[in-house]
Length: 377
Image 1 (cartoon, one colour):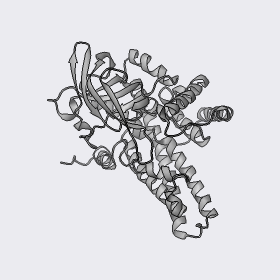
Image 2: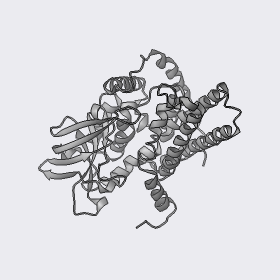
Image 3: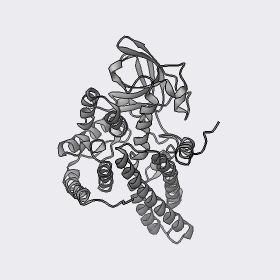
Image 4: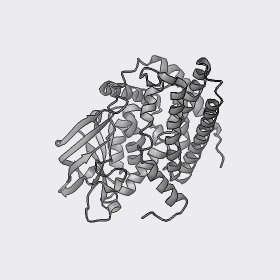
């Protein structure tokens, strides 16, 4: 497979670089990582700048390779991360673009692109663990509405969100994977209660969400009733296939910074440390090539990443943890100083083998869908 870029794609890269060089110096200083209302305003302001410049639709209307170039160049330039726009731009938006009706695309996609609305993800539940299909939040039909009761946990950006991509069980008697429905729920609906959760790193981008007979219009259902598991696989394929692409580039940048820190701190003579840095460099180069392959494959089959995203997510989550463990070795005793670079990143890296599907789940997907092994009992 040819992983090189076409002249048209390189022209897109050059124009984007030129725009970033002009736009980034005009940005105000970023807010505190713990101030999510301020971060919402900052992140949406950046998204509006992208929209005005013609780059906002790159996450779903552009070819996957162009999307990859966008992520590569914005990360290399030090542009703001999507932040509060993560779920809308990288999960819900692409899913609605792929699976929604024309009316749904017209209602929800433009406000995401213009930086006007934030989405959160209501998938995980307290009693389901990593087995997403065991979810128990119920929704029953009442005329033109679904009435939803239950709870969600680890709901990304719920406290600042306008909408929630919500998984509910609409047929409790159906096999587990066949009674699930994907809904778009307004977060200001009566019966929605949000309780922020503070992470080990001190941030509160997650929340518990409690739903007490919340009415969601049937028109907000994406896909058919009880077909939500298939729609969810589309969502997760985007999450695992392309959403972390920019972070691979960030990790390669951190590797260079670690090498410079090791030299400055007198650690460069440690042969074992140099070997670890070299192995990680090879690892992240390979992950970048895998990302290119996944994007090329998605482009070939119509834009939705496939099971290769699970291979990427499985290895990337562990490589990221190895990277920041190495950073702790470079820092020495300073690895406990929360004001030093990489310390908070090390804490947050612990969640990567759980987020977007645990490593155990990814191994099952690789075994069954790629290697053709039988399902486990």
